[in-house]
Image 1 (tube, rainbow, N blue to C red):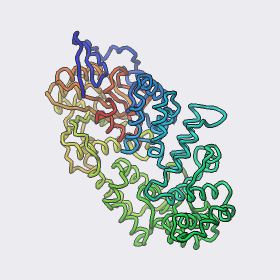
Image 2 (image 1 turned 90 degrees about the vertical axis):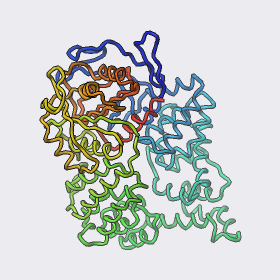
Image 3 (image 1 turned 180 degrees about the vertical axis):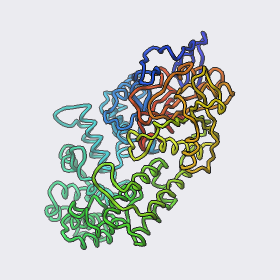
Image 4 (image 1 turned 30 degrees about the vertical axis):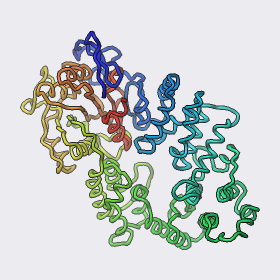
Length: 584
């Protein structure tokens, strides 16, 4: 982290970003580019931001914000990449994209794929070549590849594919030969992810004019494009069969594997389908014909080898089919998997995601369709235990936090992006995550009870809460409920830290949507805190979980972030923003 002050002492730079340190502005007066919100407070209208790493985390827009449910890709990403390319730093962009993908830093893969497609469309040869070289590492499944192709076509429309795209996509298929699992893994992926984003493998093979000397890949291309019968009778397979060692070769294994998938596709008997699944672990839900997706026998077979995340997503379905009955084998294996710490760690499931799964399952009905089920108490208890176990695997940012929470009645509304949770539950879960994983964390609430804290300008007070890493979700929520609610002045926690001479790297506010008056604006309070404390990179994050669309963050301050709504990607966006990496 680098900090530099200008000679006039009115401007400082943090990580190369200029941050103005001007005179304070009273909160009953708007700052430039601010509007009045529904509670009478002034907030910033959203403006474009500039930060590559933040865009790769899904942080973009006007101003810096993470917006859950946003479907359109930000034009800001293209502008940033173009600026880097013009400065001769396209290779740095490519390497950043690779790191974010390989190290699983991206909240959602679509932001990575979009940036990669932009680089592949670049007019700079070095950037373009580098982007295509990392295509196999970034696009780990056919779904990723198809989405990448769509973004590429959207950014560079034309009648056909250029040579670079044809060569890059062809190399993607060929790269499986060097990956763990080899072409057997490709066969599984090609049959599991047959079509996405309007593309099939047959379409892609035709468009990229793929050619290969590898007989295993050649067989799969023939299988997809011309069908099983022609592939079986092709000269390639006939010559291979005459060679010694064919029965132990990778080609023979792929032929047998594709036959298993073919048998599953054409199966018309549920008992045989269930038997195939139990005999071949490679058969997953996507390989099962649609007609069997309501079969109890088939789902009983699927649950035996179902990956952790897929199982959690399917709990409602399993219960609706009466598979998770008390003292059943399915109940036993499901409950044991849910509390398996090794599986929780390897699946990289955040506590917030597990809480969402717990609350969704406990309701006994789906938020998205008419599916209903009887809740299994043991499975419900295992989900709750998994929620608490997962805190152990959350990576610490090693920062000092002050968390401020809204305790008003309006916090009982559903979270935008996660309707199974109330804002109160989501805020408590996120506060628990920070309290349990960070070494230094204090928690306050916005209160009108002056004996709990300092009253600034007679408008609001901060109640200091006594919380512990051992507190469970219920106790955390009860602690907040015992506080008399006050107005949500996002500057109040910062002013309280100044008055009490507390040292924090990050200020976080959890509220439903609205803020109101205070003595100064949050952005001005943060500037004062940086000056008084000497912590020049102090950050402010405001989580408006039931947002009206307004923003608190200053568009000129790269160390302020708005979270609009809240979904499973938000915790990772916060982690990346706090760690400092998005601002390098």
